[in-house]
Image (tube, rainbow over all chains, first blue to last red; front, side, top):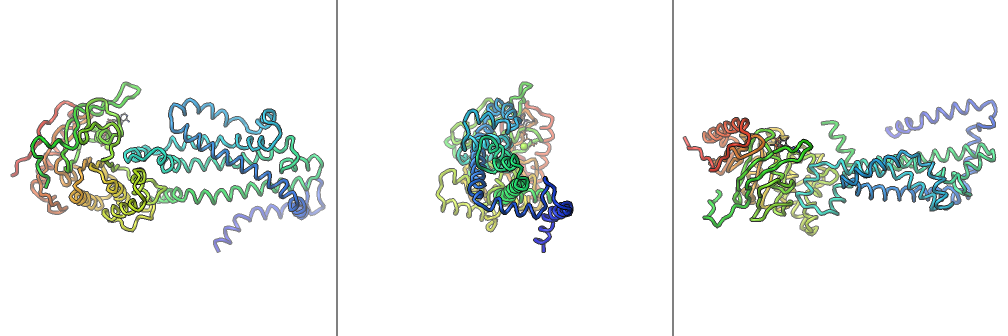
Length: 257
Length: 282
Ligand SMILES: Nc1ncnc2c1ncn2[C@@H]1O[C@H](COP(=O)(O)OP(=O)(O)OP(=O)(O)O)[C@@H](O)[C@H]1O
Ligand SMILES: [Mg+2]
């Protein structure tokens, strides 16, 4: 029953919008706007084809490689910077500057430096999405509770164990907030990095369809991107719920008390 | 109960000499502790009381090796304390911020042992024993925040016990729990102290609690702090929430310490008690 209700809430508005769209296109389709049925058909024809493993999967591969690198470096460097007050104070303005630079403008630059290849694209994704993770990690590490630090010191917890059992878990909620922000940046950069000097990938295909006036195909690509973004955030939420079970539980108790 | 030190041979376990602590600040520094001396023989249960802001927490943090001292000397077993010593465990007032909320109760209790390289089966056993000693046999698998405040403080005490310290330092550990729980925890501390023979430094701002628990009460002056008075609590060793608190000597000690604290509020780092006060019995 609850499941049904949840599904109704999630799907209600999308279904309504599709209905409106369907009514709007009843009087024959516009060149720029396909009917829902047309789009569905195009979607299946376009993507359930060799493009699935020739374009979509490689794109997703680069996305995840870039994200993984961003998480590893963002958390690693963030823990280091966050642990030393002087380092933090010297670097923070610079890092804020890098975060403020809109990542897409880096694509042409990196193309020049690294050439047109997959490594460049992964690098662009990683470089663009590392900042929220890095800055959130620094903030999380800095915010580690003073009493917990004293507790760890008084029990002579070793450096490595302090990282593993205190610093990183304490920064966990912040780190995952950073990762959530990075997801959308990474997806944008995946598309944009493929729009320049590329001959495969989702970004390439969407701009190719657009240039060759294959409008329904172009729409189907945009739909696919939306679905990928949605799936990413759903999967992320599941993982986050798991990792931060303690945090959500604690918050609930604090709200009640 | 506690035997007199036999002659000059028995150097006290813990010695605080001319302790001074100035917090460095932008405006030149806050002198929290001016000139403190006292010593604690092995196995004693000492309560430390003083007005709010007197520097009790500062003193404990210095003794625990968590704060560098400005001058003077703190010695444990004849060695100067410069970093947290192996033989010491601390229980903080803020149990909610001292237990790690991302770990189970059991993992919290085991962590210091893990860090010390104790093998897994031994850790398990030590944690189970310690949790049993504080009456929390079944809580091992829970998260700390799933327990009540009093139970969380029991977990913090269990963690300290599992660490097997020679000196147990407690900073207003029961200030944030309700009265009934507090009485239970006070009795728990007495039991632990008697069974394990551990030396305990117990900071509280509750005068009754200090008299009920301690073998001795050290009264601190207002900040910058000196020792205002050092009172021997000559109550029977078997204490009981009902009979002990209605003992005439309990009332006498309590009003004596109360007076001292009233005086301490106006006394900033001038008077220093050198010999322990023993109240004459009426
Ligand atoms: N980090 C700090 N920097 C500067 N001054 C401090 C710092 N910590 C404490 N003080 C000052 O030192 C004095 C003693 O503080 P402390 O916390 O040790 O007192 P306390 O006796 O534990 O008080 P309470 O009864 O409120 O717990 C106070 O005047 C306080 O303002
Ligand atoms: Mg205090």
